[in-house]
Length: 507
Image 1 (cartoon, helix red, strand yellow):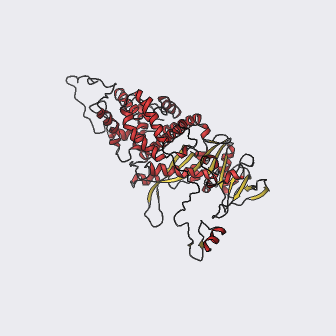
Image 2 (tube, one colour):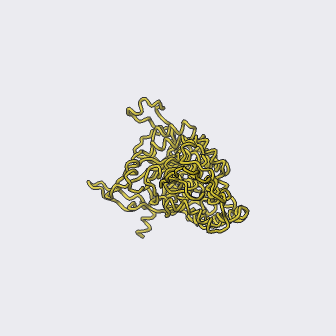
Image 3 (cartoon, helix red, strand yellow):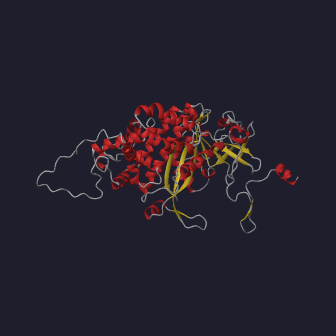
């Protein structure tokens, strides 16, 4: 728990000045990040806000600014907003006094020597990089988690219809790795991973629980690269609500995770694994099967207290040109989710019906797109500047928060301009529009921001529609041809040709 006394320093004058700068710089998200959100997050995380220019509220703002300005060092991020306001020529901090707030030094009193780590500068608008670094070390991760939790809850209250499919709230869970700078402290904390013949690289493991119909983060966790995804998944799945439906990657097959989800009265769907032996019990009217999965044997499960078996539903299907596959779920009734609802292809949809036409399980791929937007488009991959684990956690939290807020703006733009599916709007262009309008938002009057600039931002975001391109297929590298694994063990290519395709080619 971080209290006000553990802040780097207390300075109400600088706190007011930097809070005013923050409010200018974050105007695009002013409605999404009101002060009551920070107060609620602080109470939830048992953290005091404090009276410092580098309090937790200001640190959230600087974390978001660091995610926007990936090419700047931390000192540049600190002064970027101040330079824009000063260059506008019509701004002066309302909290700044005309004269120095400190009285004259008493006669005979020796002046204390300042160190380079002293955060007090010569003016109320100055904060050193050393002070920022120290404050970042003390920034509690629990505050970031509480903030994202509250923002996600507020979004769900305002745009709940966009996050639900029938009676379920749809979620997706998957993980990725994040490349880190090769500093010794980072290597010792997060570990390294070796990919083929390349040298070991410092990496962190990240898992995200996402709302795939709007591509918005719901929860996330970051840990060492050698920490198992199933272990981290158990932490995230503890946040599920009743009637949540989680779409899982095949790597999350776990008897314990399935029971954890069912215990919370939630549901899941996952691709069939060949290593799992399922006993078929009954064929349902839509062609799917009720199956039973017996608890694995071994010392880990003998005294686990879990049921000896679990009843599931198997939906088998085959996409033309690919091997047969299947979806396993604990939604047992075909009346709730039919077989066609699970496996319908994007190529079967018509323009204007993309949101409801795509097969439900194929929505799991939205989280892969989110990882790409977060790591590549937004620039988190390869642009983390921290040299300590605390700095990395801080930067990643700033990136996730920025991504959440931009996705919220996209949902607002879709709502304001009658676009049914927010995923039809380009995230890349939305981020660019935000950067382009940032300086105008900072220097304009509050009335102009409210009446002109914010509606203009939403209008510009809504103007970037992604073309409807159903049935696209981008095979993974080297997946389209057979590979010889020695000892006469040949792995067939994944993208198989159908009989019709082969016959047409011969003809």
